[in-house]
Length: 292
View 1 (cartoon, rainbow, N blue to C red):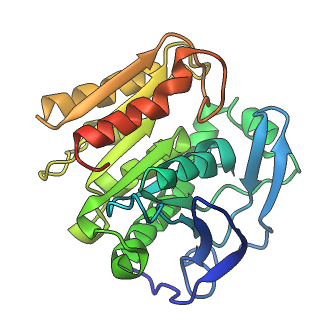
View 2 (cartoon, rainbow, N blue to C red; view 1 turned 120 degrees about the vertical axis):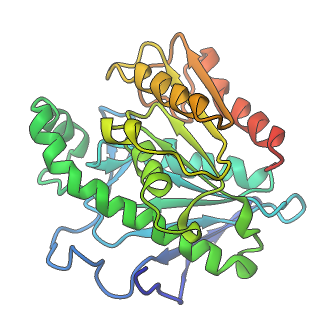
């Protein structure tokens, strides 16, 4: 595990729910991308209808501390999606983090490394790139591996600073949306030891690769929550079914929710559909497993 930065940077603004804190995951430039020159930026995506972050070269985490009157020691690392081109930072990150923190769970939003965006519209650039699926998969393969390093480094940081963060190292979960679901699976299938392996996980409209679907699940009990919509525009819903079947066949605890309507990327958005309640169902699942 690469050396972690000990010092953290407090951001402006404290609200009634939590204090936001930003931590850089590596000292100096992230290993393997020392020559990257693109600059991290944030914009509103007309295509995604939400704020997105792009050109992440220096991975970091945003920590949302649990409501101290409800804190129960659970911590969840959140990996937003965006096709490895951007991060849906609010709808698939900060909005969920705030909800979890209000329920007594410390939430950590991961900003992992991404493909370089050459325009100021990462969402549309990604949709153009994905037309050549084979080429896009080849481009994203090394980025996915780097993002795997980033989430494992984040997990290591959180566990190392458990006392400071008022969390219990054995109550650490991960949740990922779309591409972020692939990132959290990296921490499950490609962790070399228990220090970077989560205790529970959630995949939200993810599209696990064939390699992941054929890989062996860790022997320890690792509950998995899965959620997607049948009308997913990227047609990824069957991948959620395959992931569920993989966990079920391994005798691992798992729960699958497939909504009829919701599309891809519903996150914490409001569409006045049953899918809007998925995060409440997720809280029920956490409560059942005694993580809430």
